[in-house]
Length: 156
Image 1 (cartoon, rainbow, N blue to C red):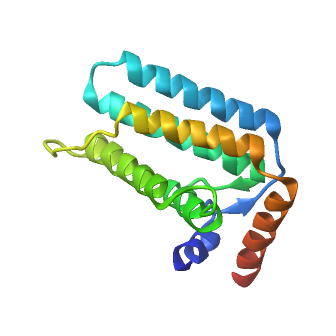
Image 2 (cartoon, rainbow, N blue to C red):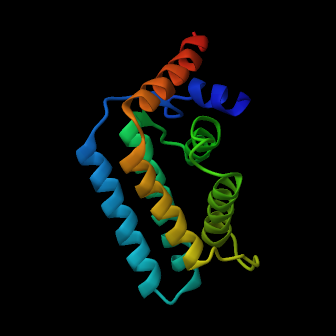
């Protein structure tokens, strides 16, 4: 919870915004485009990056459905862990963290051995996000937004 409180203090860390279903669809489109790119590109660095973003954009579609904006990837992943823990497993969280680490390692460092996230894990994560988008209830959304608002109110 300390990390979420830290995120609440950051300018682009976490905020409550208007829900926007058109934007949800755009993030899903971006997710599928990144997934398609990951299948087409042969270079491991770009494949790892595309796979991470395929997952990230699917997760971000869920946040957008709820009306949450996190412009810091660590805050987005922490949001998933803290506020969506009933919808995502610890394994889902670990996969997101591993995919992010792999992307950073290939993007910013040379010569590091990187464990690539499997295509099946990527597909499974995206399917889970799509399932959440179709099943999350207005009352669950309202409860999550209230919980986030309480944390945001504490930063003052």
